[in-house]
Structures are given as structure tokens and as C-alpha cells.
Length: 571
Image (cartoon, rainbow, N blue to C red; front, side):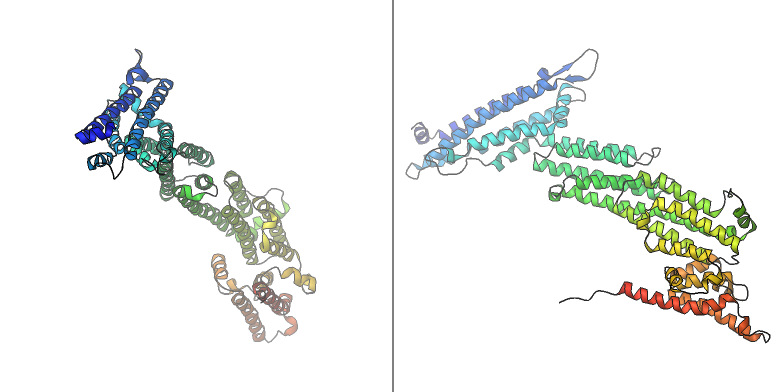
């Protein structure tokens, strides 16, 4: 009746606006008291900076939120009454007045006043009570947001029209609207919080990559992962804030990747294994932060994949260095085995430290202890280790097969070197992971230790042993045992060992067998040109290879065909 009377007198809208302003003033009073710097901030005589009592601050803010709840409930109830009075049979002046949305009018004014108050704190000079209070609010913004989120939950229940008998199901104000109004009111604090959050997750990375700092490794990565997890965990209760915090963490991950790339590109002597460890460890930790729920941390998981992919670049660099060291050591094999010092080492218990096998073994040992034993194991790392170990054995066999003038003493030295290398390699990579390279390595050692007359029997057992090797490897090695004019392909063509190795690496087995057989043909022609020679004068190595070569090649092709064949498709 009172509403109808006011409407008929034309005073209803004016009275409603006045009531809204009164409620806004009450809300503003609650906020001012909650943010009262005089009550929560003190300046001591010993310090120029204001000190804040956090328990007092949160107690007053919780009280302010409670008062705010009571005020907004009054606004919602007033809106209820207006909606209840909407009736087409009533005078148009009353119906027009009841269309006023006092909730929205209230929040428009409240949000403006709240923002003005927060901005005044933000504009306060550094170290003053207002500035200190604003900083604390920003620093613990998730807690402040949680308080207002709880307020929205309670108000949403109050605003549900379905709770009142006789009302159509609906709401005088939706949860989305409430969230929007409070989000706008808290926007300056949120912006500052996110700026501080970005600084928290990026400043440690800048420090880690100082020019004078050691390369960050697993320990640094674990520390960053804990920091990122804590940063994200504090915001998970609010989806919007969580997304923005995720973007900050993703930005930090991209920064880490960029800094690591700069280190790789500057050419300075940095610990590549530590850099790999840091990249892979941090990437794997970031990828695991959300388990299977990768969609909720999309930005972070995408950045994590970038780190893991980049770590493989560092892995390639790490293994490139050791592969280069292996190659350079093996190139010294010929000089060490074939000089007088090489022969003398058979009779001595102490090898010269500069010998290729000792240098190679030491490089592999150091690589294991200083790199492999310190880094996080990954599938890519394991595959790289397997490849390195297999290639080391295969390259050793290749280089050893190119030696010549292999008398018993030199072959004994070579066999001892192979035992030395095997002992080191199986510590770098488990024997079960060495594959066919290990079988070929052991077969070549047996070949080195056998005499030509032992090989001449060519029984099934011998063929089985030698089938672990490429036929060209066997032929070139046996050619190296022969005396001139039956010589190896690279000596016949006057190629260096390095050139021959590169040629064999880039050509197939049939081509390698062709140049080996050309040595036999050249020997045949030489013998034919000497009238004093006949077939019986052919040296044992020639006779052996004429029979052994084709049989090994046949077995090689058969094995290659079996390994490349595919099972039939059963329909």
C-alpha cells in the first residue's frame, strides 16, 4: 500500500534512489572501516616503514565483508518487493517504478566508490600506511578474493526467488552479475597481484642465468617447480585468477627456455649436462603439475613441452661432444698399434698414458661420471646412451679392420685394447642394450685372435661367428694380414684412414665388397704378369678370401632379407 501511495504521488522513484544511496553509504562505511590504515598499520620509532598487523587486517576485513553482506541483503529484499508488486492491473505509474533494478543501481555506485578507495591506497606514497596496506592486500589477493567469493555464494542463495513462496523461479541478480561487480571492484588489486606474481616466478630465473652463475641444473629446476606449484595452488579456487597465474608461469617457463638458448648460442664454456638436466627436469615437472587434467593448465603444459623439446637440442650437443672425442681418439689407433711403442706395450704392465685406448676410456668414464650420472633419466637420454655405446663399438671395429701388418704382437695389443674398451662401455650402457654392435665387437675380437690356418677350415661354427660382422669388414681385416702385393682397398687407392671410414659410412655393403674384391683381382693380375708364379704360389689369405668372401656375403644377404621381411597380413 505504501509503495502504491508513493507511486500515485510520483515520489516512488525518488524515494527508491534515496534508499539506494543510503545503502551504498552503509556499504562504503563498512569498506572504509575494513581498510582503516589507522587500525591495522603502525609506524614504530625504530623504522621509517609502516608495520602492519596481518591478523588485525584480516579480522577487520572479514568484519567489513560481513557488514557488506547485511547491506546487500537489504538491497536484494527491496528488489524482491519491487518484483512482487509488478502487476498489469496496477496503475502504470506503479508498474513503471517497480521496473527499477535497485540491485544494479546499488552495485554501480558501490563499485565506483570501492574503486576510488582502492586507488587512493595505491596512489599513496611508498612506505606510508596506505601503500603498505595496499601491498599486503595485493600480496595475499587470493585470500581476499576467497572472502568475496564466499560472500557471492551467500548472496546468490538469498537472491534466489524460488526460496520465497508464491514467486516465480528465478533470481533478482545472478551469480555471474555478482562476480562481475566484485571483480570490477577488485581489479586494481588483481592487476598488482598478477604483476607481483610474474615477478615472483621470473626473478629467480634471471638470477639463475647471471653471467657469473653456474649452469642451472636439477636442483634449480626442482626449486622452480616447487615455486610454480605453490603459485598455481594458491589461485585454483578462482578459475579466472588461475588462468592468469598459469599464463605467468608459462611466461616464466618460456623465459627459462630463452635464457638456456642464449647460453647455448653464446659459445661460452657452460656445463651442457646441467643445462639439459634443468630443461628436462623443469619441463617434466611442469607437465606433471596437472596430471591428466591438461586442459586446466593448457598454457603451462604447452610451455612444458617446449622445454622438453629444447632439452633434446642440449642432449644432441652433449653427445656430439663425446662422439667427436671418440672419433678423434680412434683416428690415433693406427699410429699407436703399428709403431714400435705399440709392440713394446705387449711386454709392459704400464701403458703410456697418451695411448689412444687409454684416452678414449678416460673420456668415456668422465662422460659417465660428470654427465650421465648427474642428469635426470629420460627416454631420449637412454636412447642417446644406447646409440653412443653401439656406435663406439662399431667404429672401433671399423677402424681396427683397416689396420695392416698385423703380426701376433700387434693383434695381441689390439685384443687387449678391445677388452679395455668393453669394460668401460658396459658401465656406460648395460650389455643387454648394446644389441648387434656388441655381438659384432666380440666376433671381431675372436677373428683378431685366430690365425689364418685356423680360419681356412671355414666350418659352420666359424661362419656363424663371422656372420655377426659385415663381410667387407672380415675381408678388409684379412687383407690387412696379407703381404704385398695383396693389400687393402684404402692402401691400394692411397686413401687416409679417415677418408676410408667416411667412404664406408656413406656406401652400402655390396659396394664395400666390390672394392675389397678389386684387391683380389689386382693381385690375380699381378701374379699372372709374373711368369715365374703359378696358382700354387698364391698366398693363404688370397685363397681364404676367394672362398670365404662369397659365402659370407650370401649369408649376409639372407640375414638382411629376413630382418627386413614383414609378416603376412591375415584377413
